Image 1 (cartoon, each protein chain N blue to C red):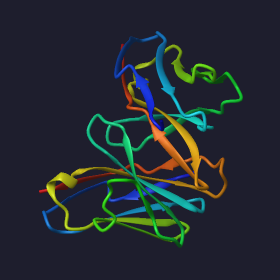
Image 2: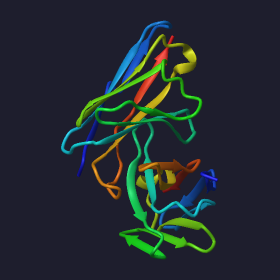
Image 3: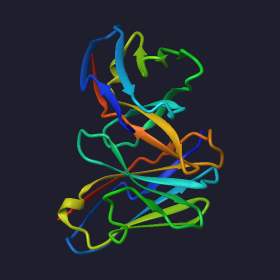
Image 4: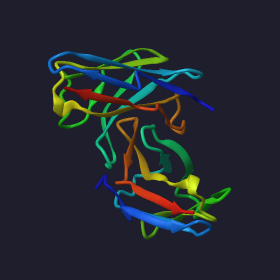
Length: 114
Length: 116
C-alpha cells in the first residue's frame, strides 16, 4: 500500500514536444508529492512538488497535475529540450511515527531527440 | 539553495574491507538524514533514517551491522559499509532535511561503490 507506480519506464519525445509521466498511489495518507530529476552519476534534484489540496502546480515549463479522487498525479514538460533528457522519479511522502518517509516511483528515462 | 555534499563520489575497495561515506549539509542543520541505495536503472531504495543524536532506523531487510550509520552532529552523517562484498557494489545516496514536517529533502550527488 506504500507503493508508487510510475509509467512509462522510458519515453522518447521530439524537441519541442510535451513529455508526460504518470504516477499512481494507493495510500491516502500520502500528503506531499515531489518530482525529482536525476542525471547519470548524480543524486536526484527536486524539480517541482505538490500537496493534495491543489489540482495543478506550474513552474516554468514543468506542470504537475493532481487527481486526488483517482489517486494519480502526472508531470508535464512543455517544449521539451534535449537538456531535459534524464531520469525522472515521482515520489510520495507520509508521516510514519512522526518521521517523514519518501516512497519513490520506479523512474522514467526520458530522451528528448533534437 | 540548500546543499548536501557527499564524499567520496567514487570508491573502489577490496572484498572484506570497510568503506565510509560522508554526507554533510553545508548550509542548514539536518535534523534527519536518509540513506538510499540505487541499482543501475532502478529506483532509490531507502536503507535507513537517522536523526541527529539517536540510533538509525533501518528498513526491513537492511542489515544494521553491515551498514553502520552515525549521525553525530546536525551537519554530518556517515554510512560505513563493513566487510564489503561485490554484491554491495551500488550507488549510495544520502539526503537531508531540516527540522519541520514540511522541510524539503535535499540530496547528495551519490557515491559509486565498487567492491572487487
